[in-house]
Length: 273
Image 1 (tube, rainbow, N blue to C red):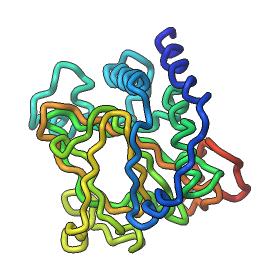
Image 2: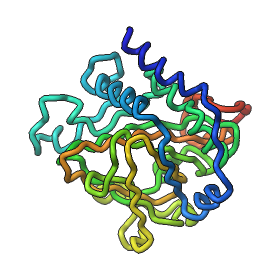
Image 3: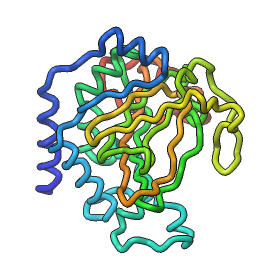
Image 4: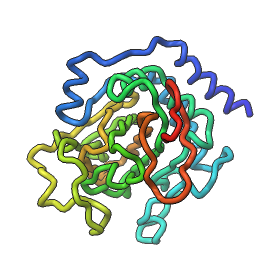
């Protein structure tokens, strides 16, 4: 397909760029706070290409497994009227790197890999990817949680998540909010309340930091960093594209057979993920 070729060619141009490592001050900031904002990861052209590709997937213009596309729950239940444009009702798309070569190219972005290598080492595999699309006016909030409380099959819980803003992420449309230093506490007890989350009394909201991002910028956070997002009350969509990376020496401790995890940097290790 010509469209796919154009998108892949756009992103492959990225791969000719030099890998950029973090400064020691940036590494120290990540280790102390559990998250690190990073400006201007992508160019406007790259942002436009990825945004269009997501729209094509959400609007079923390209082949993509339907089971990895989630519609906003309030629309799905009929509590709110659906937008006639299907993508405007999409809440989440995942496993993009498994099923679309455009997003695998993005996961190998040298700037991303350079940062993650600075934090957890040179040998990296993808654990999961998700694109979180808070539709305007109906995009729901996500309560305080730690990613590793969900991702219990990986030991140690020491993953790094790259969260890329494909449009401006603001305090009104649901930017990320981190509890500074919370990753040092290990896995905090989560309960099944309105969602699988940490109880308010254990969150530490006084240490919360909102991280607005302009389109093309990103943040990196530790999988133990407690974070949340508000509902999207604006007229603008908020799209956050995430890729979670783990050290290739991590162990799989889940039930059943280990999934196949894609190596994106360095080497694999026998008996590891």
